[in-house]
Length: 391
Image 1 (tube, rainbow, N blue to C red):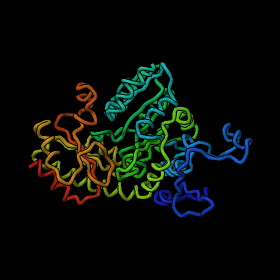
Image 2 (tube, one colour):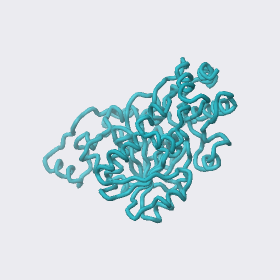
Image 3 (cartoon, helix red, strand yellow):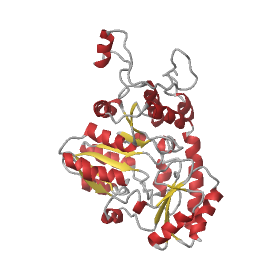
Image 4 (cartoon, rainbow, N blue to C red):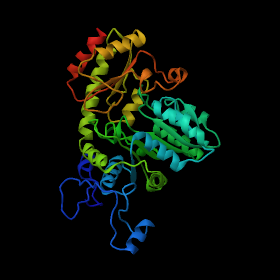
């Protein structure tokens, strides 16, 4: 594909990143090889030291992985991307590439449980400390700053309460201090939101979720400018939390239908959120598309749709929440999300079960909270499945 063409998102999703081999394949090729052969010793030396482009070893160079990276970068409006084995390894690689002992992170309170565990239990062991701010209040980020703060990290929308952070406002605070802003764009994907356009320096993905969209493989990515991505790539080259060629091949195909899937899922999610909000057994519903959402106006400005995640609190605490979950026959009881099949989980005992009760309370994760990741089923069938337990 010619580099000078200005193509729309949908066209980039099916054409970008495609470099055909000598065989002229129509779809992306799958390169299942551990290493690549040089023509001579001089070429091998030139490739290893970066003087000549070319593939060396699939831990850090593979054509199928490159295709996924290039396509995702194009869809995010970025210069570069580096792919990793999972979403969590993407966050780890970002931190290892850009931080050192003595540095400080400001992160949002409403983070995925494993991200909190990574910061508190592992980065802390190597002298990287973390403080937590209110994602929806830019001033709390300013107050959390320290002289050694080097990174702001947030999810927007957050997991599982779909809090919306003002990316531009928080980016301004970070940059005024000389810190970077990284945004986990897992819930929206570039189909609904492009954080780099709002001032973020780096974007993180769990490609396992919506980018694949069918629950098939694990993957992650860090996206940004070439200068921002390069330290992450160098860590991956050395440490090796690498995306496999097969998983990259699956993810490349997932990106082709991303916008179609996410927009359809978002529309169904909004309809379900509206129905749940009027249900007598539901205490509260969280979805950015609802006017009752605290950051509804910001979501309308920053995102093109509300997304496919709906969280809601049922009356009666854990017992009532588990009854709703156990009564379903169509929905999948799993903590994964972003699938064409609707998934349902109880965050307090699954995704956020390993963090302290105090941390869960601070993040607003109650015992009655249920999280839905809405798929492509009939809205009425999903509604009927929930009604079995809510009734």
